[in-house]
Image (cartoon, rainbow, N blue to C red; front, side, top):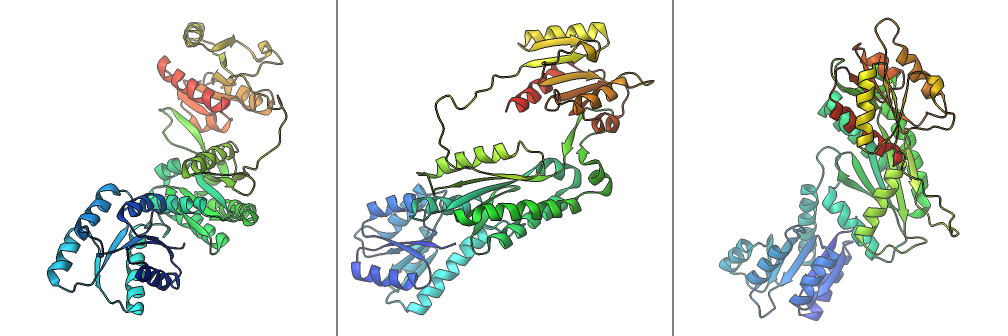
Length: 432
């Protein structure tokens, strides 16, 4: 990552001289000859370090305080250049918010070394302690600079699916190890390109359009291989984990995978950070619909009018409950909530073209557990493969229920309002 430095100095020749010194040290350098212009450049360029000369008529301490006051979130390193060597001037400058005071004339090698030392400490404080990668603030700052540059680039948003649920079961040490592993795979795949953190279990990478898809394949294959080592043998064989005991509600949580959204400015214009982040999040969310690790590259497509079919919201709810009183209560409550309800007593009553988004299914009694076999049949039938199944049961055997293909295990008795909270949640998931 190339560091950005802003020089605020109304002495043209001296500013250019300092600019050349820092550019030789591989920094990207901007110059502002007026304080008003400087404040605008700080907001626009978000420099990592600001060098201010005391050559202005305005008091240098006042300028520093204005920068600190109006740029709290950016918090660049501030270094003052001054012809003064008086100790009180140094103290006043440092107390006003500066990080260092350098007396002129400067010694180029010492000047460069001090700038690099400040930048090194700056980035160390903005580094995630677990992965060793730069944090969200720096990641977004670098993406913004890339967007504003003349480069052709590709950005990748990489998220670990079911990461929080994994941490809840396996703990902080195991989840930290998972983040470290994905970070290491990303750094290896991206070589000298940028990779940083955007959230816990989420990464941002910036590379070229030519490399992006290859990197995504490496990440998917590498993480799929490594992720098997993060589970117990039992959970790995089952292919899912559960969060609660048999006497409480619980749902089947798929094993971790990664979803990657990729965007590029190769064939379309991306004008700002908000647009880029919105596109990245949208594409990654689409990739999350796959149960296994996957990536989606958002490329522009040529489409004709009416070429996209807009699906209607599926509000169909199938209720398979042998208890007549409970079945009637569920049906009445569902209709009051605006769902399209079908109540049945056997599988034969379901029309061939009926595709519910959610099914409420009773597991049966302790003698036969007929509902578990019905659930398996549903999951084998293409008509119901995408339907979400809530299985209720008086027999508290969560593993048998979830291994049959049910998405949620709900022991009886339950609150009507509670089951419909899950119906709405799973229905929204189906339609998204």
